[in-house]
Image (tube, rainbow, N blue to C red; front, top):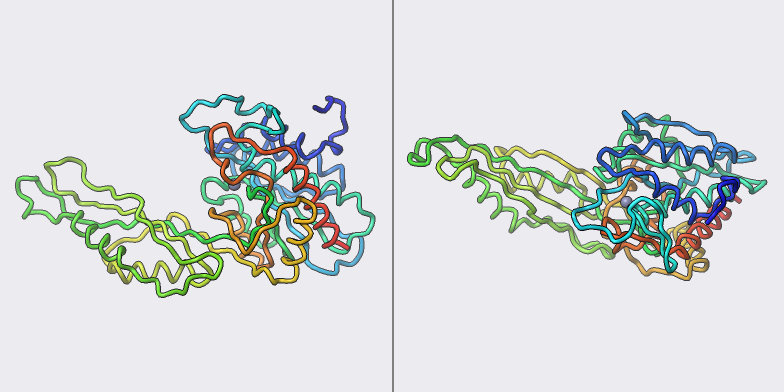
Length: 383
Ligand SMILES: [Zn+2]
């Protein structure tokens, strides 16, 4: 534990994580701004320029920039994370949810894994880098709101190119157990609305049953061939039918049937192309509503920055990874595309298996190691 009078800028990454857990940023509603204001209070005195992008009541994205000390040799290094968390779930917790309890080398609380530990590692590394006297590139932190409900924060940021700026490389500190990963699949979530005509259940011939239309779509999607080769690392594009909702009562002909479709894309198949193939399969009369549209993110392991960075990270954390990607999608879907596809590393101290779980925790040793790795990656980049 740290005394109350410890200067804020000397807080270690574990303590920063603990303080972040104490802010309830469950989304909805998010209320990320107080947590981000506290982080801005660490970063501003260290020399970071703070810019806010307002996201509504109690919500904002925080952009913090540490300028180069000489003419920049390359575009900025960007470290990114979100500070909102998912709700607690229905199961009771056996540890406090927002205290930052530390026990047996683990720090517990909502967001410990996903991803307040990752944000803390970014911030701790950034504070260390601010002490470097000679910096040949800008360092930027993008600390976002609203990730858990569809990357709303970075979508707003991507819509403001002047605010977004540029990036020569990007790190998103989502939970990977400190394994340096090459990216992740994209996600395209669709609602397929099938319209019919309602009638009394005793006279179905007077109506048109929307369920029959949905059944035709189910059959078509079951056999849909995306005609894209399996990605060498991510594997094939997948499609899941997650929901099917229709009918209000048994004695009426339903006039609406909605299918929920979850497609996971790779760089071999864009989301736009996937959507076109779905449209062609089910027919133009089916209304298609896009709920989530996140691009795949992938940097080859032999990209020079990626190769050097992964080697460096593994030498510090002791954790390496083969040609692997994450199973979830992240803010990188939006940021990497908006920045024009700089090399993008997904790496953070949280245990992947604990994200969104009851009794979420992060190993404190991994938080410390991740912060050290980010600082060293930054030192190499800024030199
Ligand atoms: Zn996350």
